Image 1: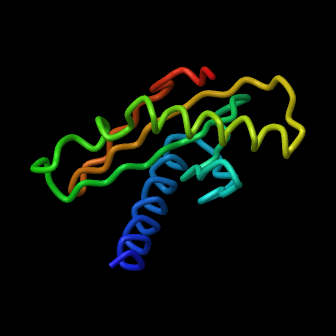
Image 2: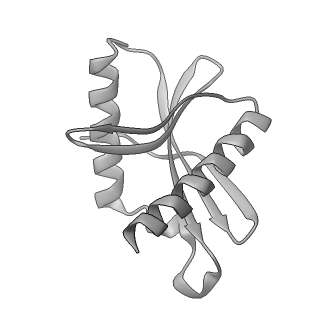
Length: 118
């Protein structure tokens, strides 16, 4: 079951990456993992580094996928993003956090969905 969920997640992350490329983003990495967490997509949008969380729901019966990125999840993503920036020695380049919700075949992008506070 877990492997099947992981495969499904990877497929929708690829779809989100393709969608972002159509919006002018450059995908830098899929599924960045480190000791403090995981980020679905890391991309560039102009001069901005973008950390993206992808959430998929087959239908609205389990809620809006965008609502699944709660404060706890936001904290984990921002912590992982700081680790990525430290690891890559990126310093003070501008960055933001986007959330991509996929419900059925509809993709919704929320740019700057949350602040990356500590």
